[in-house]
Image 1: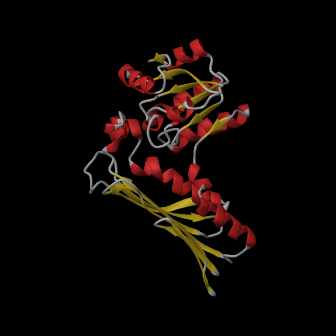
Image 2: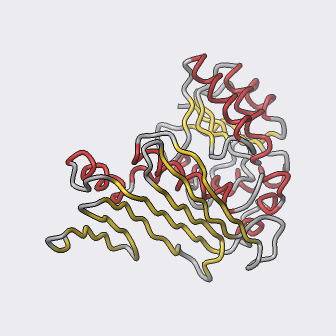
Image 3: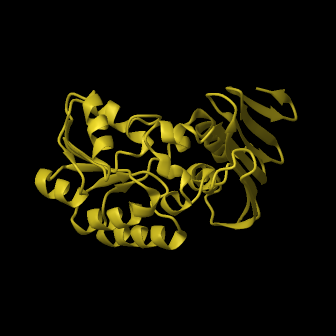
Length: 274
């Protein structure tokens, strides 16, 4: 498969998800082009993964390489525009969240993808963690009874990692559309919708810039309520003082509570723990 990547200054090109590193190691994949508006960054990324051709303009790259599939990264402020171009030209693609800087941008992309019956993927990988698989099994078995609430906390290390990974734009509200809530909050909100299977409304939110003093928020807490009344609390941050994550996930009902914290998953019921 011939794959091109757009906007490789996004840190997931080589770090965290590290798409390019994984693709470069697959025997049936050829990286046919890397693009970024900053030529030096594109060249540095290319040097790590076998020196595929680099481009500044993603349109020129697509026209020159005609890839089978596209990994679309880049600044959050340009994602919706890139998505529309890929849809209009028939390219199947994976795009990192948030796919835009406001709900209307993302809604228009989703509507076009649906209308064209296009292949568009967003990597919301927390859906596939063991906690979520166990929660869905328990929900299917009716083990929780009436569901009460869902809690998700993901507090990651300092946002200083973004400039170190050639993505200083993540600290610019105009380019990133926000801080930890824009970047990490998607996971918690998606899990709430995925586990309840219902629409939801935001009932409250608070953001803080206090810890890091950056132009984008470094901690946020959002309250949501599903259509049937299940409550949710999503907390995200960039204030964990070392590598790793201060995280906790919980789903609770009348008859059971499932909790994941410190790599330990516990199911608590009236008869004890398992």
